[in-house]
Length: 492
Image (cartoon, rainbow, N blue to C red):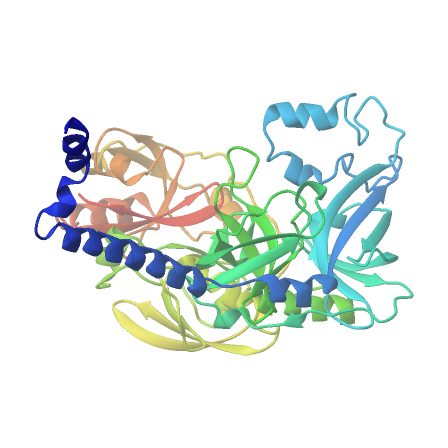
């Protein structure tokens, strides 16, 4: 009898009305979850065929540098010095030290080696990679995934875009990638990379396009593609593919605080890369368009002071003498809103637009000047080598009263200083106290050339303009600091 009671107690729920229905509903819910997960899994891209079809045209690039070569950098590791610096300090010490299997500083006579990635873009053996992969190399070896190895020559390099073009010698039946169009990319679409991170050949990683048109301090003429594809030292120069199996970018840089991948990587758009490739292949050099202006971002306060409803465009802080911009009628204080029909939303949008314009071609710019939109046609010049002029020491007598309402004191600008920084007049900031000027970012030794869109050529001009400034409204201030002009916003 007790045995029957125990057995009955084990299954009370099935004996109650509706219990079986509850169990069935729970089972149905579980089936629904598993089914939805299966559908979601089936919706994810399958990269297997894409990798099989495209990996043959991806190459591993190894370089050897004679330690006695004057052009050599440090290449004593399976990746280059630029990538080494992104590693944690203890790994840097390992690869540079005597325990390094790749030859560290205690063995300076050993050949220095580096490794990267690349891809073949033509059947006659042209290969694209990063400049920092082959920079200073005396010997370049290209290895395919079928284990064939070829010597390669460096056809040309372009440090501005961090690109290099190689040519495989005596290659036959070479596989070639399919080149796509990076301008068709959309944020959120799937992409994948093939490369040799840390020397592990033909590693495949995948992710999505995180952003487009990123500007980096090192290369402001390249509108980088940002992705979350895992890129590490050794991936440099390798291809970024879309789901059509087309190359849409060249993996170039990562953002990291640890030395490894942190979810942010950058690729050179293939449209820009192929333009550089053709110029290096045909001419050996790259000519970029040049406008001859210094620009800055338009923030909310600047937009208000210039009469814009919202921040947009590129504010011209300075027009260089005898530049295409000066000849075309551009002026400091103009805000470029459109370039050849393309909207300029951020100041970083403008340099790539100008850079890809053929030298000598005319570009149409829509600019905001004095509250009105005007159109100018400017003949684009050739980008010169970088140069920078420093400001000269300031001299003159100080006027402590002229800028007292703003919390600053000024002095006349000496003619020789004006000539050295390329301005026709202005006043020198001799000192700054707490007040509107300090809060705007104005500092001692700045040269003020314009306030509230009015030219400042002398202390008298400065005093007159300051006296009539509107209260509680943002006004623009143009200053020249260390030879460079910028606009600041001040609220008297």
